[in-house]
Image 1 (cartoon, rainbow, N blue to C red):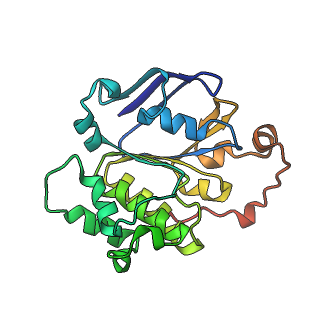
Image 2: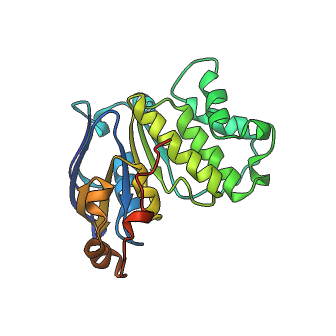
Amino acid sequence: MLAVTGLSVESRLSNVSLEILPGECVGILGPNGAGKSTLLKAMSGLLKATGNVIWQGRILDHIPFIERGRILAWLGQESAVEFAFPVRDVVAQGRFAHNDDGQLVDEAMDALDIVHLAKRPVTELSGGERRRVFLARALATGAPLQLWDEPASSLDVRHALEVYALARRLATNGSSILVSLHDIRAAYRFDRILVMDRGNIAIDGSPHEVLTAPLIRQVFRVEAHFMTSLVPELPRD
């Protein structure tokens, strides 16, 4: 189990606590500046923060770096690259904490539909293709805790849906998945939604429970009208 207790980043995140069970696929929604990326970075140890992130009873900061690389995978928002490494070499970076034959690298590339790009320099790819490469790198870690910051940004509809389906499959296999989102419609593909507002979790629950017109008005400052006949229970795969 993942437990976050009292996580704070000065002026950006305020005393956030949450739990994610193995097998849960959790989305984070909120307007720009709400703290979604800050929360994920602080949980990953990329930002100095107070509070604790605890994985199966152990404080992540106290776990040796290499071992932590087998536990947690991080996908940031940025897809910019400076060096013209072949795509497969970039994905293989996800195995830095392991000593194996790279089978998971091939599986991750297949899952993200980038096998045909294996020998291409990553600098020559489109933004959406690079996004899938970096997500494949996170997937190749085999880490049971996956933290993804807007993984579907720059992706076309087909690949975005495949990414959400991938998150669900990982959760079904016992991983804990936490994904930041901008698309409210995508939230219905997750078990739980954390709605963030000004550095705090405003509400936590199933998407059908928490995504109400008053909540959207309060957090996003827009009016929302739900037509239930047009908002069916979406398939998860």
